[in-house]
Length: 67
Image (tube, rainbow, N blue to C red; front, side, top):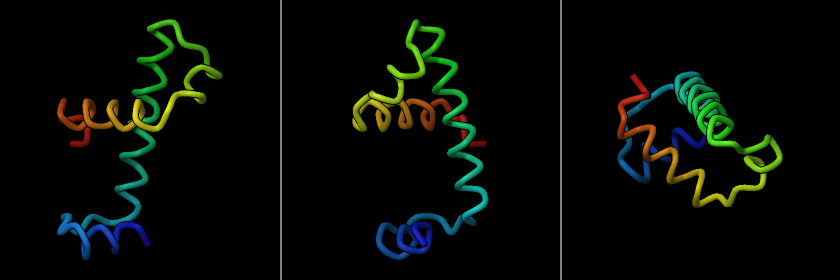
């Protein structure tokens, strides 16, 4: 599992897979709403490069959206 690998390799906090998935789904909802509000279509968002999505994830985490 990815969570076990992150705990072992990166010293991440031991968070259960269900919480990780739930947080990711919450991020996706936030991200989709933000991008559509900025004028992007679903196809636009799906075509975004990975680096852009990762940057948005960092913004989301820095805004304490995972609590």
